[in-house]
Image 1 (cartoon, one colour):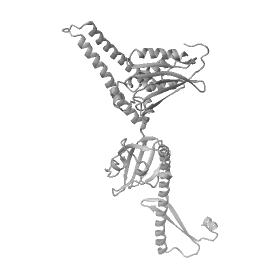
Image 2 (cartoon, one colour; image 1 turned 135 degrees about the vertical axis):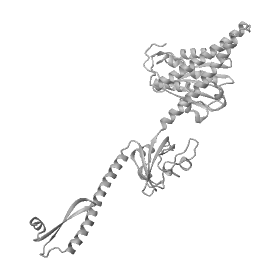
Image 3 (cartoon, helix red, strand yellow; image 1 turned 30 degrees about the horizontal axis):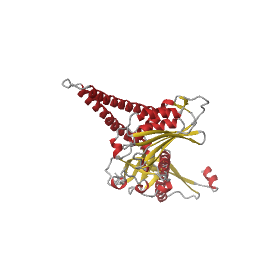
Image 4 (cartoon, one colour; image 1 turned 90 degrees about the vertical axis):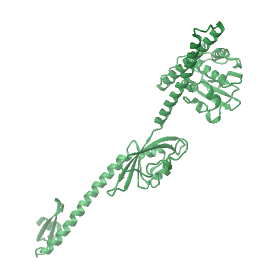
Amino acid sequence: LALASRAAGVPLRQVVMLPLEIGDEIIGHIFIFRARGAAFSQNDRQVLSAFANQAAIAVHNAKLYQQVSRERERLDAIIENSGDGVMMLNPYRIIQTWNRALANLTGISPDEAIGRPCYEVLNLHTSQGVSVCHTACPLINPPADQRLYVEGIHHRADGVKITLADNYALQYDDEGHLAQVIANVRDITHLKEAEELKQTLLSVISHELKTPVSIIKGYAGTLAREDANWDRETLAEGLAVIEEEADRLDRLITNLLEASRLQAGGLKLKLSYVNVVDLSRQAVENLQATTDKHTIELDFPPNFPPIRADYERLREVLTNLIGNAIKYSPDGGTIRVGGRLAENDRIRIFVSDEGIGIPPGEQERIFDRFHRVDNRLARQTPGTGLGLYLVRAVVEAHGGRVWVESTPGKGSTFWVELPIGDTGDEAL
């Protein structure tokens, strides 16, 4: 009483202490002081006891609110700093939370996303352009107590297409009504690309390996028949076909191994001094011997400079480009292989043909691994779609670049630009 009196500034004469109880737990005490001399009556005690009960509830609720607030802050921090994209939706698919990782993933800020339907913001669709959000969203009629999954293509604001995978966790209230949806969003673009690449690889290998093996087996079996008396010319023709198909198999396996090394970062260059004109002349002579329908011409200016490059790799580049010019000019014509000087101590080599040409939409994609132009001639022409991929890899490893200029029906010109490098006075 003395301490309370000094604190209050008035003399206090009586005090009553009441426990603050929640159930069987005492969470505190309340002290009521009185300055006048009359004792606390029974009625006073009943009123004060009711007040203590209300105070206990208020204190308990305040503690619960603090706990909930701290837990909410902890959950918000976890969501905001998660490496995965996370969004929280209400039962009507309206976005309530949109974390930093999801903003970085999609290019859409929380301010742009929160308060809008998720199907408007993400707008997932299939590769055929069909809306996933409107036709296959598992939240439209969600089954109870199940984790739901959907994936689709999302167009970022910068034009980049990514494939997103959404895992949904449903939360229900005590009455069994959907209260909230938590979605974990991941970028699976690389996984889908790897899956498609695997399927393409299996398709290419199964087709490109099966065809020459079948031809070799057929000719070998035919030539080995004991009841046939083949003349020398027939035997020579059959053996030539077997050799040609064996070479085709060798090229296929070599390209696959090279592509594998590139994927593992294993392309190494053996640089030396290369006379580009002599190298081109050798490649032209070798490939001219394979065709009677085409005339392959050299077109280099006088005193064309040597460069520092990997001789064998550059020979493979020229062989590939000239070989493609022959394959995709089925009616024959003139193929030109030449060079030009470029700026900044660089040279350009070109291979032009009068073939079927390449559509504008395919002129960048033809350098992708396993990609082939989708037309009748390309489908009928053997190939893995690795040749130009390897060409680009070799050229870029030299610090150069490769591109194509083409008009469908009028032919194509492939350009390879390379640095001259420090060649001194010596050249191969």
